Amino acid sequence: MKLPVYLGLLHRSERTLAASFRQVAEGHGAEPDVYHLCRALAGQCEVHVRALAPVVDRYGEVEEDDEPERLHADGLSETRSGPVGLLRDLQDLYLLASLVDITWTVVKQAAQGLRDQELIDVVERCEGETTTQLHWLSTRIEQAAPQALIVAE
Image 1: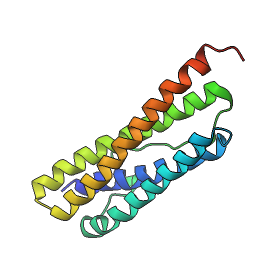
Image 2: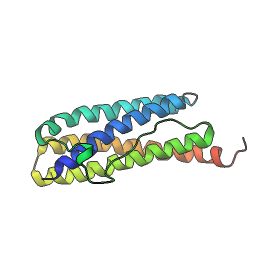
Image 3: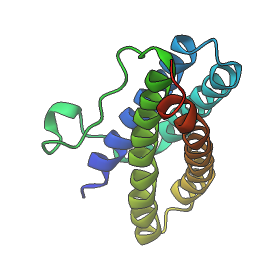
Image 4: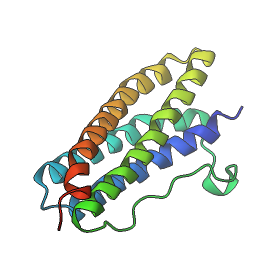
């Protein structure tokens, strides 16, 4: 069974996304909506990590070193400055959240195949919140783009 590979990816990706949301919140603290929402979304990701714990205990997870090549995500190590920096940081968050979202989809398919209702419940709860994160990021990117790309500094 290869489910532990994707549980490991999901577990690590949620932790990475949480840390990246916090990084962006701190780096763009002058933007109150970004600061507060990114901190709240980081908290959601941490709840997802905790919700996965019993499933990971049951099925296990593959450590990063044992994972197939390129099956990982790097978080934000630092934030950029200015309006274009905010836009790029939001895009990076969107990419990470997209990885988390599609990984939830893959795990959901396995859960349905296994008829594992506990895992299905976890996926449905967390997947919905990840979708909301993606919607907020998309909207905030749309809002930031004109300011960053058209308005002279």
